[in-house]
Every structure is written in C-alpha cells, then in structure tokens.
Length: 486
Image (cartoon, rainbow, N blue to C red; front, top):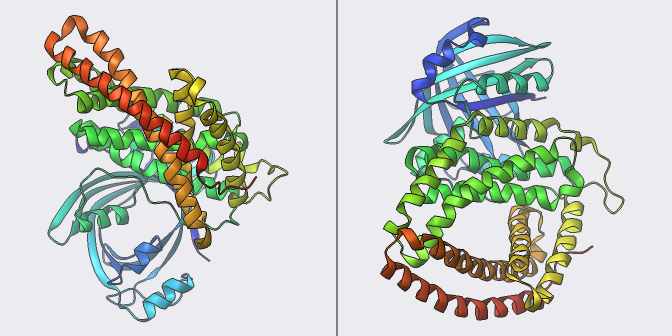
C-alpha cells in the first residue's frame, strides 16, 4: 500500500532565506537533519509516466540511494507515494501498482534519465497543536540538458496528527514571510525546463477523471487545475509586470471563480462566501489593470494610458505581495482538502458522482443563459453583460470537464462549446467597446485631444460592427445542439 503524503510547498525569494531560518517557529523547533540531495528523474522516451501524472526518481541522500514513485491523487495537498531502496542505476517498478496502460507502455520502453534536481536540505520537526510536522528548506538547482533553474522552496509535511494543524502552521508562517503556495512539484518544474517553456503558464489541460468519481474528488481535481497556473504565474507577474502574465493570472482566477459559481449549490458551507468574496476582490484588482491593456490594444492610446496603467499595475503588485493573498491560497487549499462541503449528502437528482452533478448544473446554467439570449434585444448593456459572464463561466467549466466527455459525445459537445464561446466573445467585444468609450470620456482632461478624437471615432465604428456580430453569434448559440441532460 502507498503512503499518502500530505504536504504544502512554498516558493520563497532567495533574499528571504535568512528570515525563514531565523523565524521563531524554526528556532524553537528541533533540527533533525541537514544533507545534500542529488536526484535523477526517469521516464520512457515517450514520457509515459509523465502523461499518467507519475514521477519517478532515484535520489542520493548523503550516500543512501532511494527510489521514489509519486502519483497524483487529484488533491493538491496529497499524493500517493511508494519508496524503497534503489537496487540499480535505473528504477525497478516491478512492485509499484501502476495503471495497466502504463505497465504495458513500460514493457516495451526503457526508463531513461530526463533531468536532475540537486539541493541542500535542512529539516526541522515542528509541533503545532497536537500534530507533528516536518519542515524542509531546499536550496539548489534543477538541470535539464543545457538549461538550469534555481530552487528555493519550503515544505511542510504532516507526519502525525491533524491536517488542520498543518494549514494553521502555514498561515502563521505566511503572515510573517513571503511564502507563496506553489502547487508545482519539482518534477513538473523539471519537465517545464526540459521543454524549454517560458515562465508564463497557460491554462492547465482538462484533467482526466472517471465519471463515477465522487463529487468531492472531482471538484478538487478541477480546482487544482485552476490553482496550479495561478500559483505559477503570480511570481512571474510580480517580477516582470508583463501583460501576458497578468492575463494568465487573471484567467486562472476567473476559471476558479467560474467553477465555484457553477457548483455553488453543492459547495456552500461556512467558509464558501468568505473565499469567493476574497477571489472576487483579487479578480477586480487584476481586472482593472487588464481592462487598460485591452483598451490600449484596441485603440492604441499609448501615453494617454501610461500613468493609469502604472497605478493599476502597482496596485496589483501590492495585492499580490500582501499576506492576505498568501493566506487566501492556503485557505483555499485547506477548504478543498477538508471543508465541510466534502461531507454533504448528494442531491436527490444525482448519485453523488461528478459526472451526474456536472450534467445537472450545466443543464441549469444553459437554461439561464438561453433565457437571457432569447431576450437579448430588450436587455440593456448591464443585463447583456451579465448574460455574457454566465456564458463565460459555463464555457470555462465545459473546458475544465472535457475529460468526462465520452468519445461518442465529443462532436456535439464541441459544437455547443464553439457556439457558446462565440456568443460570449462577441458580447465581450461589445463590453470592451463600452468600457473604452467610458475611459475616453474620463481621459478628456488629461490626454491629447487629437488622440482621443481619433480613438472615439474608431471605437464608435467598431461598436456598430460589433453589435451586428453579437446578434449573429446569439442566433448561432440558440440554434446549437444542447448536449446536457437535466
């Protein structure tokens, strides 16, 4: 049987390392070890383990060679782990209960080194409440081919006791230190480095899930697919203030908000409103800066927006640097792992399986969106925007839950999603034109009159075209097949 590893991992700026090591929590703890870890990660030439979300390594721990295999459980804070002494230069997976498809792939392909992780590790044992927690601080490098990336990570792993104590200790430390929850494993970072990817992470692909999985298990997996790009992109946004990093960060927040909004009936507990309120506040800060980037891209206002953009990006930086943001990610991880919603009885219309509840809620949301689309001609700009937000939320969830769709149903689902996204995109462009017009009016006293006059004319011409395009997109949505059953 595998052990279940319950842990939280944080990225830490290198210049904060001394503050971490001097923190009262670690000063009062028992330091149990300080050693060098040199690990090599293995996979087949076709990367069969990676595709199955399995990491396999051999690590030299101060002369002792240990083989470890880790597999995702769908919970960002828990993984299955199999550990044994390494018997050779390459891993021996004979006794590891791998999925049949992975076992078949391994039968015809050798395991080869993919990348290395070399770190200096310090370990402390911390008592929190009635629990014993291992704290580990790693500094070193990941090396893949000719590329390398620094490692400065802090981990908390529950060794004995209650997971709630683990999260409480994390909150305590994050209130004093710039600890950013990082859901990427060293293996994921190693693969990104080997692939030569830039630091900006796009949306995580739709996770593979069984439709018979419990709602709690499925929802946690879906939420992790939103949290991973959020936690990965924020450090890049802080360091670069790049518009693409802002866009990806905001998209991750919006995808998570959409997921929680669509399934709110099944999730609402004593922590739900506080968490969704915090996410809404974060989304607003990101959205204010993103709106300026969108307007500038549409109308090329340039210098006329520079001061406002600097202020908006500075506010984003302040929000993301604050303990409030760091606590939010910890609170979300704690809620997903052990919130009261996980033990709620399923509604009568479902068996409590993720596929049943996804179908139920998508059908309900499609009905709401369809009513708004049918009345589009009589809606004002604000009401039209609400329909667009609902459509975008459902589109995000359709994309996230694509792994639940049977092959025979994909064509119909894809046709529906194309029509839904077409409508929300067209309505979004209309809203961008409205926001642009309002911003042009606001900029009047502080910008070049000729620049604003040109922008206003262009925006007006665009608005007429966009209105006609939106009407056609709404009609296509209303004609599209409806793949959800109530």
